[in-house]
Length: 186
View 1: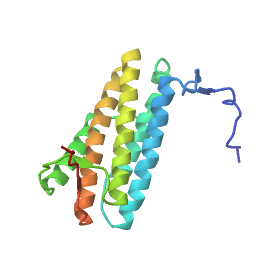
View 2: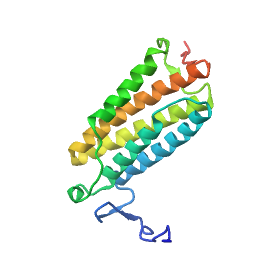
View 3: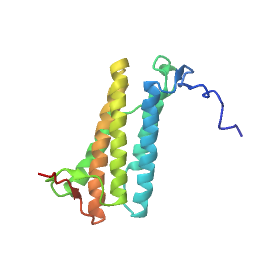
View 4: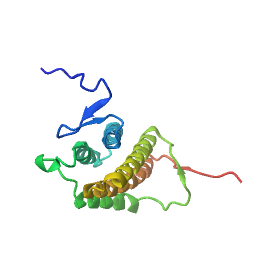
């Protein structure tokens, strides 16, 4: 079995798919590294949801995040030589349908909501905030490199953060947990 460590990154560099060496704090690496962080948080959230028998599409979302991570980890000049899976517009449409389905069963929002009320709801909000950070990083990468596929990634992440917000509300409703309304002091 091959060793997990290669020592090739010991001086702060890593390889993109295609072999191009970049610093580990390169914006592209920050983007796909934060996608990885988001994917791990969604995995944890999904583990919690399984224990309460709440059906979700989180495993499919994790698959899309791997797709996004692979696309971001590939040197864009060398990408055509590799069979990197594509994110598709229908992936965004699926999120929109799921948001609408959950939203139809939720009470109308009358206040801003504080993350919390239950550990699972909080994990949904943590995933949402990581997703927003990932989106901001990808916007920065697009500003630098203007790759067309990054625009679809940004759109997907924007919709995913909306999904995670509504999922948090939906989980609260399923668990009969009161949403924590923000009541600003006067």
